[in-house]
Image 1 (tube, rainbow, N blue to C red):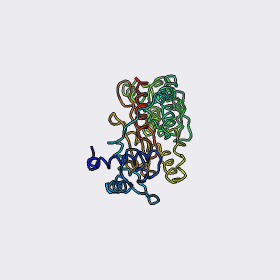
Image 2 (image 1 turned 90 degrees about the horizontal axis):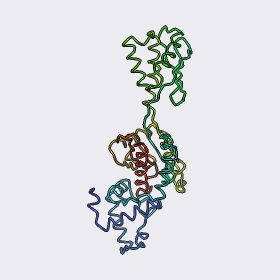
Image 3 (image 1 turned 120 degrees about the vertical axis):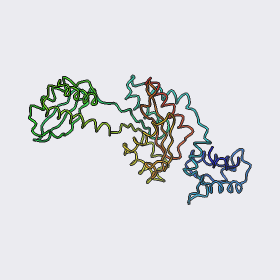
Length: 347
């Protein structure tokens, strides 16, 4: 239990809990008169104001300039989430909605992950996010089309039918026939392999003298494979759904914060890096406001949980992005349940 909770009296804890829960529910600062009218409170507004002032001095509450009420600080929210929040398990309807949407894709993992981000967004009124496990693409074909004496377009056809192009540098003095030779070799010897497997086989067959390639064709293949390997390793695989949920009724009062949040969500590479940190360990990760640099300007929170494959290895992360005043007690268990549902699908 953290020091601020230990330092608080039972009366202060009760006041603090009411302020936080009311703020998370309404988005508005909570005044002493509002608290005094609640059932179970026998304190006068003056006594409640004194307690709230003490909580403000502890750094747990703050008083906006435009209101006499108080609202939790990021430190206060962290204290509440870690030590005082009573989690609300997803309802039977919510559990059914999550499991139905995830399983509706006919067993295709990609469909399940997209559905997970969408259903979380709808149920939480936040943006749903899923960090997809990195899957090494397999080769079907890789051909080269010359552009100039020193450039060619490498055209990769993946095992799933996707087609991508890259411009690669040609080895010095390469003949047009080497481009045809390279493409034929890949189709005959490397089709069906991942990029890393293809590079290893190419290296092994050249080393053993079994490649039947001239040096220019072999180098050309290596360059083509390397260009996709570098891109694939650097490319974040992130699904985001429901950004429109972040523009709620209160957005008009804080348009700059919402604009900043939407800009931050566009930076999927940064979000992916943040979610990567949630892959460490087995449990839920909750980032509140400036606790992470990415969302420090917009004052937003991220709730994320890892999901696992049949071997128990973490393969991805599912979660939500929303305002710091989101309903943690409801959303945290919902994200956890979704992660468990994805894990069951992958077993």
